[in-house]
Length: 318
Image (tube, rainbow, N blue to C red; front, side):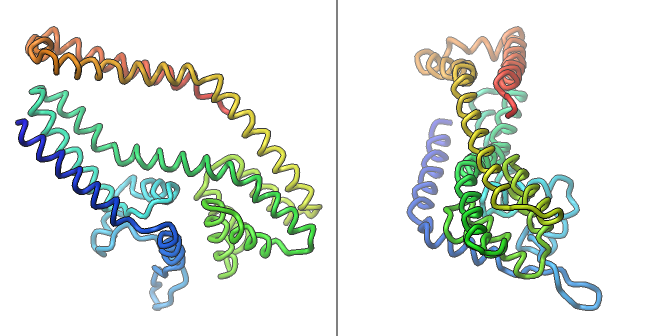
């Protein structure tokens, strides 16, 4: 058992080191992302004409068609896109399946309980989605931090006499990513003939944040009713900065609850690992005695309930 686990760890470490040294540079990633954004994957109509770009779920045609009919594939594709990742839905599903199978097998070697092995396999199978959620949240926070600067730049450009489309191009070229890349995509869509409203709605779908909704509402309302857009954008940027300040204060006030939740989640598993290293037979009764197994199930259920309660307490909407 120990040589097998050591072999798996060495294999994962080797692949991690290889991927680290072979990863592209920041400039190469930016160029590749820009080329992927303008790559034409089109829907062919009955008469052979192609006018719409379609996101691929897989590079294999029959698998792409199968995944399009699978429930939940579209939200997964949106999650990958919102996280700024280049994975395909097929690759994510395959990696999740392999992680679940390998995790359940390794857990069955250490703890011979079917339910525990299934829980470990399920947790590892969901780990790619958790990774994407973390990437998406980090990207959205970066976007929220840069968006007021982009809105100020738009207001200054409008006061200088530039049109809205020119201002959007200016933001895409001068503001750092992810704001710059998203505004470049929006400007390219509008340049190719997509109406402003549809381009803004696509931006809201890619970045479903309240600040982006405020910006889209301000621009579309001004387009339909008229008014001083530069002044509206100034007020929008002020609202965004005030919301960011309030979110920062709330993170400070809820830091104790979040840290308590992390400690309560990690402490049982850390203590189990330490006690197992000191004396392997000390906790063996938990897995051999029926009462011990019931206590494990009860502990896991109560831990999940505690996580949900703590998350509900510290999740304050701004």
